[in-house]
Length: 557
Image 1 (cartoon, rainbow, N blue to C red):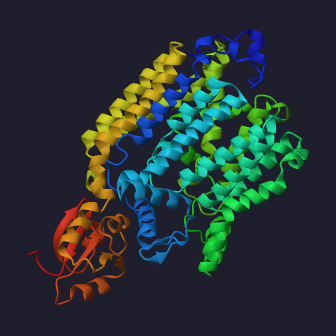
Image 2 (image 1 turned 30 degrees about the vertical axis):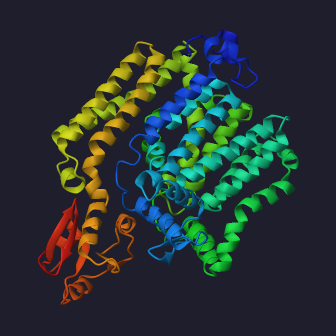
Image 3 (image 1 turned 90 degrees about the horizontal axis):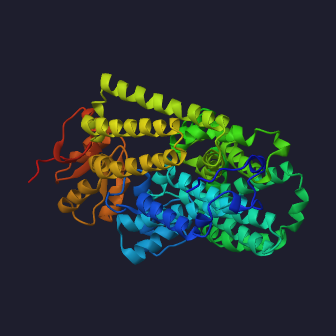
């Protein structure tokens, strides 16, 4: 597809939007951007939509956010999100609105709960394609979109009921609109005004970070470009009005309705997560290095090469499009690394920039025969081959037998998946050695797609009983009158609330559980295997699902 070799002169020129595409790609491809678009659609349908509703909602996050959206419909309150009947202030409302709308159309199903994430993930892939096309040309945009769509964490979050995918979509859209407004006089006003609207939706999706990240990225980029005067062309007055028109109505409404909201969400939840000495998710400053390698895999192995490639000249002379991407990547990575509270999903907004940086390197490989770039790819991919070979040897010598006990995954399943992945990775490396660069790229995409399909078809059904409480909650429904609460010992299993339409209470100590089970009436509670084993007394076990048990004070009738 991308086989035409660059001339010596063309290799020296930056891959700008003004560089003629005809010297980069066959005319056949340039006239068939619709084909590239259809390939991306097919890839997104396969990775994000295949068997989207086949598994039950998993604890913790999926069950929590699905219940929040469900309660929004049942209560009729679309302003104050609630979970288990109590106000839920941890996240803004936009993704809950999308899930609630899907529930209204499709019913309270797993597919409806996950549909917004899959649509937003697909949209982000398409926006990344558009940005790559504007920055360089359609080929780079296509490669970047494929890279983003086939990165592990992006796939997971595009199939999960979480808010992060909304943030990454609107941040990517906002930065794309800004770049288009910055580069093109034509439609500048329109693009910049839409940029402010996208910022508003980003803030509705995840809070102030939706404004802070794009502002810092754009500020750094304009400083690097020595063009701060462009701020005067950004229609800031109208932009503020558009931003406030999108973002403020809900924040004002919930603050007026709930006097404790602003203090909790803005101070405790946002500033506290960034500056608190006692964070909710404490992790070391280097936490995101392994997280990025795992989350952006398999393309993360080429990321160091991509960054070196971007800095191969002095930073001040770096190509302006690449400077924008480096600013984007660096701001997100450093910002969340400084924060005291860290979660693996937080750095997802840098994935589109990382995809474009890696795509530039791949474009160089696919259109160049230079030894230097080939050696860079060889040394980038070789550690992956060695790591996977070492991993399969380790699994053979030290079988993870506890996986079946803790997650329902057998060693047979692990060995099959490991052998498949190692075989495919070795084959891909051989293609690279034989200078089959296009086949090498295609093989990496194929490895990811096949691994995801195998995981969905073979691993997920085994894991479901351990990650969801669907069947156990259904059993609870059969045994307990509808007006009574779900009772849990040491922690609520969120998915159970979604499937039963009940409120829940949690008994926090063994004494509280003992007093509860001392009732003359037949009562039930749900707990995990580990917590059940630590009890100083033995209740009756009524039913089991994975590592969770439904217990009672009397034998089952």
